[in-house]
Image (tube, rainbow, N blue to C red; front, side, top):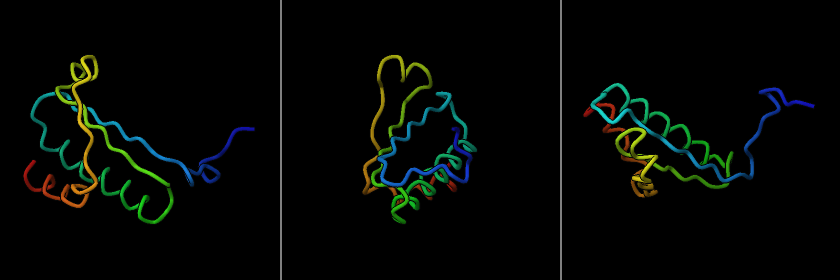
Length: 87
């Protein structure tokens, strides 16, 4: 039996969010990243998920291929709004 979107739940799950950009300058993408982080953090703080990790890959596909990434520390989650203004 397949689940419908209304039946889909991540309750009790640790969510790993990976983000990769094109590797070049893209100010509009920065705002998208900020909003995705804010939405996942809101879900975590509302106990809709049990854990949350953001892994950011650098330099597009090259970052994935060579494993060039970093984990966004929880202490920075509330500071992503600056991406909406700085690009």
